[in-house]
Amino acid sequence: MAGWPCLIQLRQSLYTLDDCLNGGDFKATAAVKSLKRIFPAVEAEGVVMAIPMPGHPVPSQEEESVLDDCRRLHDLIDSHDAVFLLTDTRESRWLPTLLCANANKITITAALGFDSFLVMRHGAGPLSPTHDFRAEAATALSADLSSFSLTDRDRKQRLGCYFCNDVVAPIDSTANRTLDQQCTVTRPGLAPIASALAVELLVGILHHPHGIFAEGEVANSSGSGSSEQPLGILPHQIRGSLFQFSQMTLVGQSSNSCTACCSTVVSEYQKRGMDFILQAINHPTYLEDLTGLTELMKSASSFKLEWDDETDVDDEDCVEI
Image 1: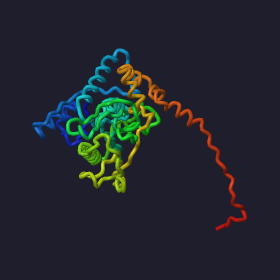
Image 2: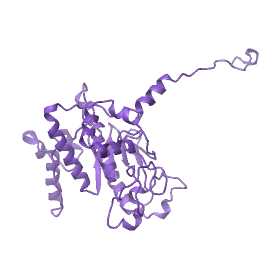
Image 3: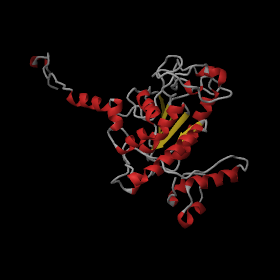
Image 4: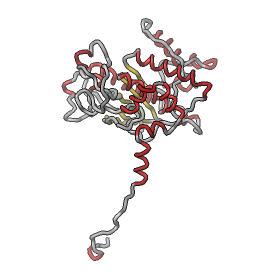
């Protein structure tokens, strides 16, 4: 994580003007200091590191440093129960999403636009647990993993991740863009709204008997089963807009061509490890070729649609108004 311009203090409550002076402190370390001022007993550590990203090729002389970051990120995710993805770019969420899917960790994404936001919980990893999650929910937040599947332990299709609706692999989204396009420039109230909803999603998952395997529920749905849960429904995605002051809950199922969480990608990562990550970072089309998205786009481009302009209505039946 890096430092930031002074405008960020306007919308992120953990930071003050002092954190921006003299070149600014790293966001992670500044956040820890602020948390300890609020609650001295908190156990928090600020980790300063770079997240390797697809579309951002790695020079050969920097490969070892990048792989060290990958291993460190893997260890951090493996040692925690829940992960919040709050980074600025789409491609920076890819590796954490893959690692969370591999480890079957609770993962929550919050993404901001100028006046809109998305908060979502990722579905369970593409592996079916071999035991009952309800019986172990009090002692563990993650289930053991076994066979690959697009379905969860109840044989229902699992919920999708942040990348499941994409038809292209994540690429460099910051090149040749102005500063306001590279950074998340948002309305002041958007970040607190989205972060509060993200925390409530985590609370809902922890209190749900199925935990990470809970189905996505939609507001005002007769079959949501919200009356059975004391905290109400547990949505999959929450999309909101400050332009219209509106909010909606949506459900998106997992994709067998997802570049981050499908069984093909996770199994390839388990087989090849860091070599797989380097190839995904350095070769923009590799993930698309691996998951079948390349063939999907080819078939879509070759699809021909013919329009029939003929009509059965006679000219005599037409009435001029």
